[in-house]
Length: 270
Image 1: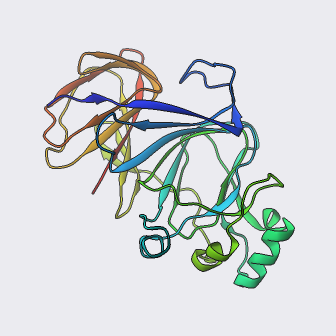
Image 2: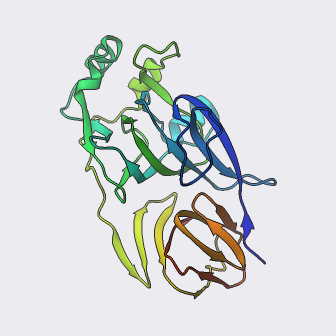
């Protein structure tokens, strides 16, 4: 079995940007998200590139149990890997102090929650893990790769005055008010591979390719590869930043190669 190229869906957002280089050419639209997918059955994980020129809403996601009961859906745990960050760019991960659910509602309605968010300055290469229940927001001037459970359930607490629905009752139910650890430390795996994040839903690694090497997928599990930086070849295909491939179980070994350097993100289900 061979690696299969993933499709890409470009989603216009008010907080997006037309500056998609070097991943994609600009079409003049404010693109906020690029979703990777397949023409057939849904992938077990949802993977996106996110491009921001403004802050995204302050939001929270439910866990599996709550989402199954109230949304007939999976929950949503996710991770972010930063690819580009303008000076001063930051991600909001949890709150700076403990508050009560009633205070959370009041601060969300007044907009004061923005000042209570734990804004973490970020640079390219940083990784943040966002388990279900974490209050969070993506700041302006950032490009990141997001890997998450296959779910689109989001509860908004605050949206900077944009005319979109808030979901305060459900957000109060699911929000964790515990401190967030911030940026994750990568773990060396060897052969130019590092573990960026791991949980019960996914493992996410970064692979650096500077020459030709044989890549042997785990035959028992699904994987996906997204080219984050550079260009090269994957199983004979010429690839560049922004391309993605999924590797079904039992995918045959293939060659990865790059003369100028290439960095890929690998997502898999444990």
